[in-house]
Length: 481
Image 1 (cartoon, rainbow, N blue to C red):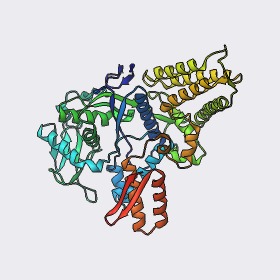
Image 2: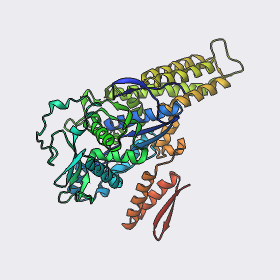
Image 3: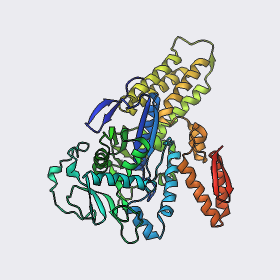
Image 4: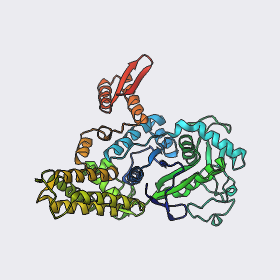
């Protein structure tokens, strides 16, 4: 297993990846806050994390990935109240949209998609321990982390806390605290808000403690890799480090990776500019999801990505070159022996080695694409005169290996996705339990509402995913076929 080097935000340097357990990588990736559909800036981060996961697998690691679903926080509560819905009623369609977008963009499923609301007891356990150790304190039913008690605070982001005056009050949190630098772990309940019982009275968790509790429950006290967008570095990831390390006494994360912002036509996305696109918006405008993935994956994750109509067209053009090469290879005359002009078996192996080397250099995707299109050029040069059966199979196998990471070369797989067949049907990876349970819950609600047509459609959708349903007096049971 050759070296894989990654740029660690903690220390701002390239480091050779050395996991805690040989042959295995535990990976935590910040998922969506489900009060709306993901926008393409979110999707850029999710595609980067997918590229990372697939590169780890290319290097022989077994990946255990957790991606959280934040289903309780201020915006969710406000939107649910505005619409007269429960938290579950509001978030269910957005969770469905999230998984739909993952499927459309060929993003591999994580092993776990925990919802914050399912881990509140673990959050209360952590907060209680932090209070007892003196790292947190209670004010009128809310609990705050005492940043001054963690001297290493700021080492991830490089923020200088000396520039923030102690004792200064801020209004953005709406909860009292001793120090402007402190952050909330538990929020005392307000009228009309969902709440859980706790030693400090009814309330709900703060955003930062959610990820610490879920990652610890599913991956342990220390993680190999934690990912997110650069906007998560401060304060979210900085706060995760502080509360997690004060709780456990162990390093929280060994490697931090962050993707840069996505711009649209050279400007930051915002609703006021009307350029905060979702994948569904792009598809309505005629975009090919395969080209969207290529456009998102083809720029290095630590560079800003300027998403434009031209970048989508360039992606489509690159994909046409790949499709045309594969067509010409499939229909090239077959030769009995390799001509003197070159051996595509050797060239194919060199392309795979080159792609692996480039991706091993902090996911250098532009270098990997250079290796791929070098092979495309060589195949196009040779196919007019014919190839041997061995050469054809070698090129196909190499493209399959390369596409196990890039996920843009198999046009037929993308055609099936467009017809509603999920990647589970083409890659062998089934849908996760949370996705299945969400669909089963929607079907149950449709049946209770006597919307039997919708219930039947959901049953058919689950059947296509390989899921068998059994309706019993105690509810609907499911199993994988």
